[in-house]
Image (cartoon, rainbow over all chains, first blue to last red; front, top):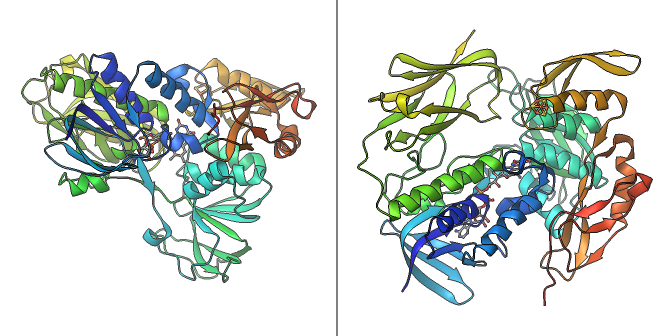
Length: 416
Length: 119
Ligand SMILES: Cc1cc2nc3c(=O)[nH]c(=O)nc-3n(C[C@H](O)[C@H](O)[C@H](O)COP(=O)(O)OP(=O)(O)OC[C@H]3O[C@@H](n4cnc5c(N)ncnc54)[C@H](O)[C@@H]3O)c2cc1C
Ligand code: SF4
């Protein structure tokens, strides 16, 4: 059986950042396992620009961002095995892989999970009607167009206003298709505002807020999509139907961390993030098992994924060098208006100068405050002009504050 | 008037007035790039364009490409037409020029990644 000090599962942005951090800190016996033919992960199909503003102070396309990190990993001599799928890992940190040589078991001392996320599919959302050809998830469509070079349709409708759907609306338009509209169930968009502007408004593509697809027709190929307005209980309103003659429907209805392996290993997930629960080093309840990137919680900015990968890498270095003290910290809690807070625990409050907390609001707010509390006592307040569920928020607390918290840290929204 | 700055993911809401075809009284931008964007948006809006061109001899079938600078918004479809009429052979290096002076804009279309020749 092969023995490796630290195995990184997944060679996307998170996995590469973790590996680079480990290598730079003297952990040479590393291995990145990637099921695809190359590293870079989802970025390889995200050909639009808008990546890397924090990391490189310039706007890169997804593939260019990935290539910079792939090159860095190569220069550092980090061992990467592509076309290699992890089929299982166990609490004793043994990992089963399948590659062109067949099946192998690798024993690791530490593991970084960086498997990314999956798209919600049409099976997970309910649309009445048939299941004709021409219905794709937006990410699958993105891969078909940008990597495989397929033409996927001429007249298109999009359900869901997540960023991938918006990006694909523009992409399909530039490829010569007519995009008739985007329907969003909620009264606000789930995508970044800049994508509404540069992907929809620039091309006069209508966005139907508080609308959903209520019927699809056509066989074998999609011919018609019906959308309806929804009431405040998200129920379709009779008589509000609009019909669009389209051959393609893209579903951009959300991403879910890909934790199939994690669950099979017996590590339970946080019901809100659908990722594992971690401390400030991205370390799970199981010492030596770390997670970063979309497998931990779905990110909208790759720069944050890279930063989180580094953090997990740093944690793994300290774990492997035996530098982490006994766990003795506090838990975090998503208070009023907040859907989740990460990390869920701070285990080593006196170790680092500061800890960064990430969270999302449940619904949009204007002129509100983010309030951080030690139990009931306020420790920090940040005024915000606007807060949107689509945008991850961050707050950093210094060691002086962290060491005074003994029970739980609550983050909540307070309306003006 | 109001617009959303698209220069970075923060997406500031910017307020402005227009006088003689130029934006004035610009407020709400969290950084100077937002002001420059608003001025350009009123005078002569531009956009970066990304797309792909078919590639032969690489491990995948499409090479992602990007404009070397933002192009006039009105030229986007002309630029796309030239991109659609282009294809290339591996190997390609990131930053390599794929189309010179695309659609007469004076701007280049560059390879957005490297792709090696697959044997
Ligand atoms: C479609 C889309 C558009 C986006 N647009 C932007 C944008 O405009 N700007 C921006 O900053 N960010 C954007 N993001 C966000 C950001 O780019 C991603 O969140 C980030 O790249 C995710 O990195 P990751 O490493 O967590 O996951 P991934 O890149 O998905 O990497 C996971 C890797 O793990 C591998 N893997 C999974 N399971 C296994 C297994 N069992 N064995 C071996 N390997 C495995 C996968 O093949 C993959 O390579 C976008 C994200 C998506 C999905
Ligand atoms: S004004 Fe500056 S901070 Fe605000 S969106 Fe534009 S570039 Fe970003």
